[in-house]
Amino acid sequence: MKMTSIKMKKKLEERLQSNEWKTTFNRDKDTFRIEWRESGDGITITLPNVISKYEARGEEALDELEDHVQEALRVMNETHHLSGKEEKIFPVIRAASFPTETEQGKKLVYADHTAETRIYYALDLGKSYQLIDESMLEKENWTKERMKEVASFNVRSLPVKMKKDTVYGNDFYFHSTQDGYDASRILNEVLLEELKAECKGELAISIPHQDVIIFADVQNPEGYDIIAQMAMKFFAEGTVPITSLSFLYENKELEPIFILAQKKPKQNRKED
Image (cartoon, rainbow, N blue to C red; front, side):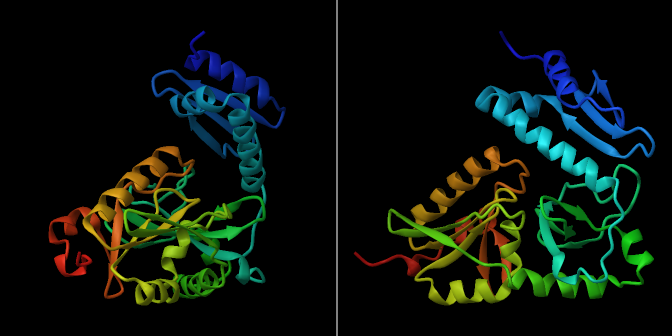
């Protein structure tokens, strides 16, 4: 039988029963919310997205969602400090449409990145992380500049493990450790400069979702089409989608490939 929002709501209610939090269903928005009874802090889930994953993966998808929700609620109910945990602060990439405030109205700390993406900042908590808001900085007399410097230093320390695949004369490198910061590797300028120096053609980069980053040595026009198709596929599958667009890295800057596609440099194509 076809899974409906009402049926999924009942499944989630059974899984997320607790005296400490309550659940509500918004029929108009097709969402399901779990929040702490005392504080009102919580998580809102879009049911059609859950149904899609359930139909593809069954109860396993709900197991993962349940773990995520319980961990997120636990994190919300704790007080976290930045001082003394400097090595746990990292940048995370999100879509430009990602909210700049929490549901409780706290302003998240973020920085501009590209027209498609923004940089937010997170305190790593082991199984999860908490996005840093301005009130966290104020309580500990941290400046945004200090936090950004710490996060920038830490992202350069993250290991990079890539798998290579060659398609139609173009080399693609995939990195996915699922540590929560795979896409954040795009902020490691030292890494990007090293890859750029080694490229035979153009360096293209894709961050379709949080848990993957794709580097491509584009050596012929087909390479642009291939990375575009890869990005779209990964974007559709990601739990935290970022952008289906890919970027060319040139002169330490990122530009969306769709802008430059008509400027594909013929001199970079190999001679027959």
